[in-house]
Each structure stands twice: as C-alpha cells, then as structure tokens.
Image (cartoon, rainbow, N blue to C red; front, side, top):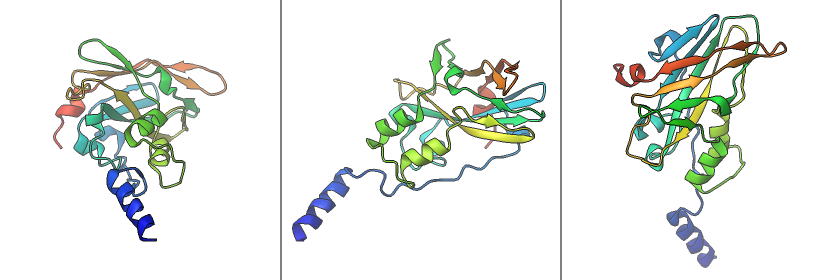
Length: 196
C-alpha cells in the first residue's frame, strides 16, 4: 500500500498525470461593439480578441505558459443580424503576420496533446474544455453571437505574432443556398493597443 502511494506521489510530482486538476474557465463575451478589432459586412460583424500573452491566455485556459509553448489563441466573435444561418470554416482562416507570413490555425486536439501530453476525453479534461471553446465549423445562428477560439502556432515563442497582424476570414457560407459573405479582414493592432 505504501509503495503504491509513493509511486502515485512521484507520478504526480513528475507531471505524469497532467490534466487531472485542470479547471475549465469561463470566457466573458462583451457586446461586440466593445471589441476594437472588428469589421462588418452587411448583416455580419466579426470581432477578434488576440490573447497575446501567457497571462491573458490563462484567463481562458488553465495553463500558465500557453503562449510560451508557441500557441497563440485568438477569440473570434461573429454577430449575425440576418435571418440566415451561416457556417465558418476554421481551416480557411488565416493570420497574416506583419512580415507577410500566412499562418493557418492549429487543430485544437493537436494543441492539447502537445501542451498536456494527454488526449483524455474525460469531461473535466483539457481536451474537453479546449474543444468546447473552439470555433471550428460552428453554425452562426440568426440574431445571435457565436464565439470561439482558434490557435496559431509560432516557433519563435518570444515574438508576438499578433502585433502588426491581420486576421483574414475569406468567407462565411449561408446554409442551404451556399451564398458567400466575405471576405473579412481584421487588423489586430487596435486590440493590442486598446486600454485595458
């Protein structure tokens, strides 16, 4: 019995059981007009809130060094004032850096497995929290705000990839008719320089 407890203690101290004490955090959604990085086209308004520091990222995800590990989350909010349903396709969204580099988002499961070394599917796991907050392939309902995160990876972990960057969403697609609304181009600097 003592030996089992000692082994369990060593495993916990060594971080072999990651995610067991992970706490899902609630992200407050403000009125879309309060986000400085936003654009509108017809009845659709899209806002982007870049989480450019470890401190800000830890308010949404229970990990202290997400950005230091190379993953930069961005909170996307879409307000649909039309009578139609729209779809956003995360794989089409691009972050254009100040240097002109085009970055595609990293799938949430890849982020969680890389950061936590775990792919647990328990309800209180990091994977569950990250995927619940993911905007990938969500429906944008009429008269509602849909929100979620995308994650962009940068090998230069000390560089803020959002600075001078632009979030580019080529289209939203109307369900049924497949009518396209877009493109949406959102400069991110207003969100980075806005007073807290």
